[in-house]
Amino acid sequence: MDTLWPALEKILLQVQNPSQYIGGEWNTVVKDHSQIPVKIALAFPDTYHIGMSHLGLQILYGIVNAREDALAERVFAPWLDMESVMRREGIPLFSLETHTPVKNFDVVGFSVQQELCYTNILNMLSLAGIPLLSEKRGETDPLIIAGGPGAFAPEPLADFIDLFIIGDGEEKIVSFINELQNIKKETPGLNRKEIIKRLVTAIPGLYAPVFYHVSYHPDGAISEIKPTEPDIPASIPKALVQELDKAFYPVKPVVPFAEVVHNRISLEIMRGCPHACRFCESGVIKSPIRYRSVAELVRLAEESYRNTGYDEISLLSLSSGDYPWLDELMLRLNARFKMKKVGLSLPSLRIDERLKNLPGVLNAVRKSGLTLAPEAGRAFLRKIINKDIEDENLFASVRSAYQQGWRLIKLYFMLGLPRETDEDIEAIAQMLQKISFLGKEITGHPGNVNVTISPFVPKPHTPFQWAAMDSIEMIKSKQSLLRRLVKSRQVRLKFHQPERSMLEGVFARGDRRLGRALLAAHQAGCKFDSWDEVFDFNKWLKVFKECGIDPAFYLRARDVNEILPWDHIGGGISKENLLKDRAEALAVEIIV
Image 1 (cartoon, one colour):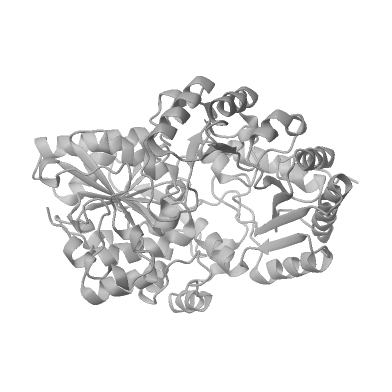
Image 2 (cartoon, rainbow, N blue to C red):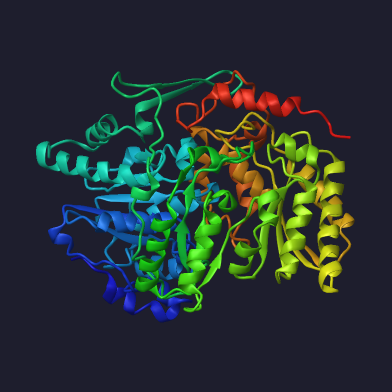
């Protein structure tokens, strides 16, 4: 086995947090490469600190390593200090389990969770010694595949990724390995392009950009996206796990040595969301709604606890409060784990009549902070985005939380939503003041309120995919207005950087012509664009100018008849239904 460990041992004391590079954590799986026909490097294009908290990575790791004929090893983006030493010493990107060079694997699979990781994908390929452009790779280079939310709008990465897996990866990774095995046994002489074609034609839900041609109108809009060969599908369906109770869940997740964002058992209780908020891409791409049963969740929690010893269980979903048997689940988990000092946590909860009537649920949850997402300050705007929650339910939920012992309320809002006015921003300020005041009313002290304010990014596969995104100047103006209006010291505002959100919008709504900008940005040193201490917007402005790309072209409103860069990718909801939903949003009457 070609291991880089001797070279790594010599440099680890030169970098921060060396434990994130050594592997050997609890529940890792190590196999002999010489005995395994299919070897996959699961690549997360961010740090170990971020990637080891991602449930999807643990799921794929468990599925692949459960097979005798395949192995999966993890690889993360090394931090700046480690990358510098690696490049200086000539050490290529390596896997954690066996410290094998990534270029020696058969497949490198990237988990694309968000647009600001794109430059990290290129940087990791560069560190691995793998040609960045698909067309430049040879027969000995690994296949580069990608999945996750980013695969639903894949065109900006089309020049660099050989294959995208669209939708739930649990089933497709099994089919992918099986077909790769068949290819090796039956037709070992196939060249790289022939292998990719065989995979695409044999497995629905795979997208290979090399087999599609995109043409453009004189104004830059897309005129056609079509397959270049007759047996390539014109559109790619979304892969779905039909029954969540039967889906693989990693009851023996790798337990990290180093500190990570979420050191806990992540229990996915449901997939999908019943509310169809018009801004939410996740609700679309994770549809339809599927539930795990209470009995199965309790069993998975108990097994995971025995295999990890974590002291917290997080109940994950897009809207955990809508899990039909939440009361029963919380009571049963609390009964099992309370004496073990294992806490329960819930992500953002839906604000509705039910939440204020769940004191038993709220009592069982660790009181680090109750997270709610009104998204907009006025009922009118919430109705437009189909988050039709009532102020009275919001305030009743907060009042109940204060009564149950919470001292911190976390809230999420967006600026720049369709049909927003200054009145909506003023309504946010008024709501925050009242929520803090409710704490004083109940406890005698103003409640602490942490607020995260994000610019609205019109995402693909949503009813708002045709909407325009606010310019940087407009976003900054709205942020300034909210700062002036919020006067309480107990209300802390955290704003997403407008420049970074603009970049997110460009690549979320972009086409494959952005590939040249990505390549130029990588060559200019752009990486870790979601990290404040690394992001350099001036580099991006220079890259766009040199590449002749106007970001405003991608942030503009789109005509409903325009071919969008992601129209050939199945999101799960038809364009006709998205247009119908959009029309309903535009028809909402102002509430006086």
